[in-house]
Amino acid sequence: MLLTCNCLPIRQFSMYKGMITNLSFYNKLLSFRYVVLPIILMCCVSMAFSQFEPVVLGQGNTLGATIQRSNQTAEGQAINTLTQSGFLPNLNASSRFLSQATLGHNYEDIEAIADMGVEDWIDNQISTPISFSLLDKVYEYHNYRRDSLNDPNAPQSISFWDFAWWQYHMTSDDVLRQRVAFALSELIVISRFSGFGNRAYAFSDFYDILMNNAFGNYRDILQEVTYHPAMGLYLTFLNNPKSDTTEGIFPDENYARELMQLFTIGLFELNTDGSRQLDSNGDPIPTYTNVEIAEFAKIFTGLTWWDRDQFFKSARNDSSYIFDMQMFDFYHEPGVKNLLNGFQVPDRNPVDGHADITDALDNIFAHQNVAPHVSKHLIMRLVTSNPSPQYIQRIANVFNDNGNGVKGDLEAVVKAILLDPVARDCESGADITFGHMREPFIRYVQINKAFDAFTTSGNYRNSMYYVQHYTGQKPFTSPSVFNFFQPDYQPIGVIDSLDLVAPEFQIINAQTLTGFVNGLYRWVLSDNPADEEDLFSGEDNDGYADEIATLDVSDETLVADDGQLHILLDRLNLILAQGRISTVAVNTIKDALKEFDDEGVEDLEFRARLAIYFVMCSPEYLINR
Image (cartoon, rainbow, N blue to C red; front, side):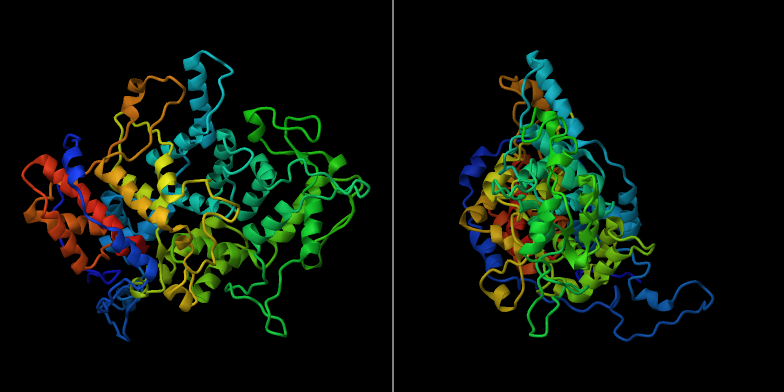
C-alpha cells in the first residue's frame, strides 16, 4: 500500500541532469514588469490560505478501519498499515519534514528522506560531527589578513564572522544541528547592537556554544553563556560589583531579569502544557518579583575579563572574548541570597562566587517552567507558531525526563518535536492554525540550498549584507534581547480575532515586504545570491573570483519550455512548498511564464529563474505547514 502524507499527490516527472553556462539576463530583467506584492500581501491579512484536500486513508487516518493479515505470527500489528509506524514518507512529506528540520534542502535531500525514513535520518544527523569551529575559521581569516598585509597587528573584521557562518552552513552536513542552533540563537540572544558589535571573535565563539550543545543539555548552555564575556557585556553584568550602600551602588539587574524572563522560566507560573497557573482570583501567578531579581543580581557580581588582573578594566584585545570570565570574589556580593521556590544560597565564608552561580543556575533549571518554556520555543521555531497544550506537554515531559531520568536533553527534545504526530500528521497541513510564516533569513538560505549555490573553489564568502538590508534579519542582528520578534505577537485581524499568535509577522512592514521581493530579484533573477567582500582593504578581487557563488538551475532549465512547464512547476512546488501550491496558482504562474520566449538556453534559464521567483512569492510557500 502506498501511503501519502500532506494529503497531496505528487505528479510524476522525469529528472534531468546537466549543467549550462551562467548567462546574463540584463535585457530580460529590464523588461520584467510582473507585480507580485498583492500576492504577498494576502499572507499578511490571513493565515487561511490552504485549500482543504480530500481525506486520505493512511498516515494516521484509520477511519475506524479494521486490518487483518494472513500471517498472524509476524511481528508488529496489521493496523500499522494505516498508522505512522514503519512509515516511509513520500517526496512531499519528505520535503515538509526538511522544511522543519533544516535551514534549506534540495531535491536530493528529499529523496534521501524518502529512502531512509525520518527517524533514521534524525539519528544519522545527531551522529554527524561538527565540521569545524566558527572561532577557528575566524582565526583563519584573521591570519590571512595579517599575512597578506605583512602586518601582525592588522585588526580583525566583523565580516570574518559572517564569512565563517556562511562557509559552515554551505559546506557542512550537520543540517539538523544548524537548524537547532539557529533556533537557540533566537532564544538566548546577543546582538551586534551592542558594545562589541564589530567583534567577530565574540560572535563566533558564542555561536560555537550553540552548535556544540544543540544536541546536548540545556543546563550546560546556561552555564556556558553565563560565563561568556559577550553575554556579560551585552547584558551588562561584566564588571558588575557588589553593593556599596554608602556610594549608592547596587548590582546590575539586567542579566538576572532576562535569564529568567527570556532564557528559562518566563513571567508566569506554567503548567507542563504551557498554560498559565491561576490563583484563587483567576489571575496568573508571577514566577518572580523585583525581590527575586535583586537577589539573583547579587549572584552575578564579581565577573570580569579572563585576561585582566584588575576589576573594572576593558577588554585587552580580541582574545578577551573567547574565554570564560573570571571571578573576583572581592567584588562578589557576600551573604545569603533568597532565590526561587524558597531556595537560599548560603552565606559562604570565604566568599565563593562560582559556587553561588552554580547554585543559582541549578535553582532556575529545577523550576517547573523551564521545560514548557524552552520546549514551546523550539516547537514554534521548528514546526508551528500555535502548538496545542497537548503537543507542548508531550515535549515538556521529554525535556523533564529523556527516559533515563535526565532533564534538559536537547537531543531527545528535538527528536520528539520532529517525530510528534502533530508535526507529521496529514491533517495538520489542512489546519489553518498550524504552521508559521517562514522567517525571511531561512527563505534566503533555502534559495542557496535548493538550487545548489556553488563556487569553483568550494570556499564561500558572504557578508549577508543584502538579506539584512532587505528583510531586517540575519544571525545575531536582532534589535534587542527580545529577538527579531516576540513569541506572543498577534497581528491585528484574523489571527488576533482567533487569539492566535504569528511572531514572524512582527518584522513584516512596508520595507521588509518589498525588500524580500527585491531580494529575490537580486538573488535569483540576477543570479547574485551572496555578498562577497574583500578580507582586507585593497585585496585583489581576481584573487577570490573562485569564491563568487552562483545558483545552479540547470535541472530547472531543462524543463522550462512550453511543453514541460508542468514538470518545472511540479519540481519547484515539491522542493520549495511541499506540493502545497494550488492548481489555480500553478496555472497562473504557467500562463505568466508562457509570455516569455523559450527559443534558446538563455530564454529557458530566465524562465526557470522567473518560476522560482513566482513560487517563492506565493502565500502557500511563505506560510509553511
